[in-house]
Amino acid sequence: MSVGAPKIPVVVAEVVELNPLIKRFRFVRTDGKPMPTFSGGAHIVVEMDDNGTRRMNPYSLMSDPTDTSGFEISVRRDDAGRGGSLYMHNHVRPGMAMQVSHPVNLFGLDLRAKKHLLIAGGIGITPFIAQMTQLEHLGHRFELHYSVRSPELGAYADDLKSRYGDRVHIYYDNQKHMIPLAELLEGQPLGTHLYVCGPKGMIAWVLGSAEAAGWHPSTLHSEEFLAPPVGHAFEVELAASRKTITVGPAQSLLEAMEAAGVDAPYLCRGGACGQCETDVHRCDGSIEHNDHWLTPEQKASNTKIMPCVSRFHGATLVIDR
Ligand code: FES
Image (cartoon, rainbow, N blue to C red; front, side):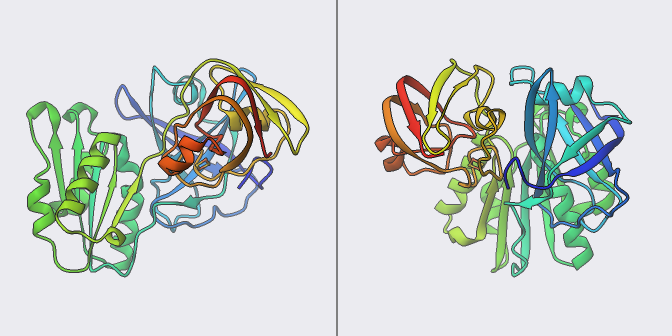
């Protein structure tokens, strides 16, 4: 995918405020065609014109993967972020025309699994909602363990409990409930796959515990998109395009290239998929590697950069784009 890839023209059909932090958005097509079907765990990139700044944020699809009448996402407001979630919360209204990408799945279910053990934290619940619908359609075995701050912020907890009964377990932080991870990891039938989506610390805890308990890496699946961080403005020379661009404090290098008309590849826009990996020709300074794609050796050598999340400090950065 790149900024020049075909987009889906949509109108916002519904905005639902679930709690003070989370809103759900439904998009339907404006060109009369059916929405593409997708597989649980897929995301779309939503384009926004935020006061002249084009933002393209990835959000997990949570609607029924077989429903071609529309796409649904949920957005958690991030008051300290660069503005994408605030734009969605403060400016996006029913009836508004927007563009979204075709779905991409970087967090798909492994349907060879005998059972699917799903572990969610906070807004990390959204890909699992589509995955559970898919698993239910297919008649596959699963259970969900969903940790949230409080009942007030537990978007979808009651709904999931009533749809899936005792296959759904909810844990409220403010009531000191803890996911009994060690017990869960021990008590699974052979052939179970584990999926985790949520805050960074939770993903590290779940994957680290599973590995320590002897789970094979091929049975472990996680998704964490990093938000591009804000920072100081910096200049970058694009060798192939023969352009020098300035990356603004609240802009990513990828967004700055796109704003300059340079069609750069991406999938996740969050430092996870590797699609935007770019060779560095010259680096007089230091790259702030914010991705979790490059190896520690690649990061230390400053020969590669992931423009969706990484930044630069110093005199000269020349990249192969
Ligand atoms: S677009 Fe996925 S790592 Fe940059």
